[in-house]
Structures are given as structure tokens and as C-alpha cells.
Amino acid sequence: MPGYLTTHVLDTARGVPAEGLVVMLFRIGEGGAREGIAQMVTNEDGRTDAPILPKEDFKTGAYELVFHAGHYLKATMQGGDGELFLNEVPIRFTMTEETHYHVPLLLSPYSYSTYRGS
Image (tube, rainbow, N blue to C red; front, side, top):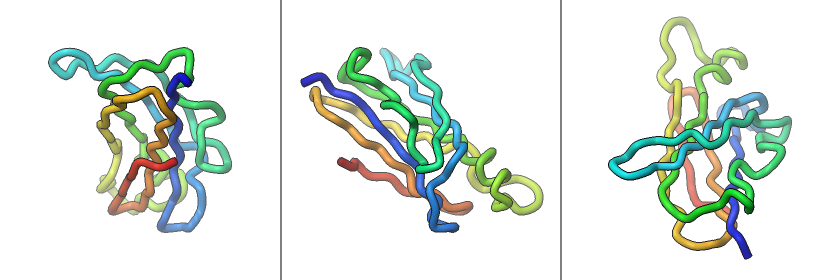
């Protein structure tokens, strides 16, 4: 079965899915060069409407998801005045087998965490 990649974002400060957050996916090449391969926006459930890396485009290797948290935090009035503590949240990971990978983000204005989900 071909692999694929999904993601979602939960706003842990407000206890809701993070709707309207821009997520970009990059493939990491030789020497760390990034190749942009997808950009999506989270829906009302904090998920992208389709896999951010679908089966037909899946390749094993190193990747980076970049979550544009700053725009979301400002839009939800969590940014405070001035500069944000978190703006872009990058997560680098490696997919080594043809399977479903799920990489979620748990976000608040001053912290985040991730894990390999199912």
C-alpha cells in the first residue's frame, strides 16, 4: 500500500481545533535543500481537507512541515501586543516506509508539541 501524510493542528490554549492555519510541506534534499511541494489551510476540524502528501506523490525521505502559527495566533487574539513568541513552527522528520504517517501539532502562544500519530 502506498504511503501518505496527514496533519492537523489543535489549539491547546483555547481547547479547539486550529482553523485557518497555513501549513507548508517541504521535501529535504541533498545538503538540506528544501523543495516546496504543498501548501494547505486547516479546516474547521483543524485538519487539511486532503492528505498534505497524497499516495500518488509519496516518497520516503526527509520532510519538513512548517506551520504558520503567527498569523493564526494574531487572528485569534492570542498574539498580545508586539512580537510573537512563536511565528513559524518547523517540524523535520523522516518517513522510512510506505505507510500512513500522521504528524499533528499541539499549539499554544508560548509552546508546541508534536508526535507521530495514527
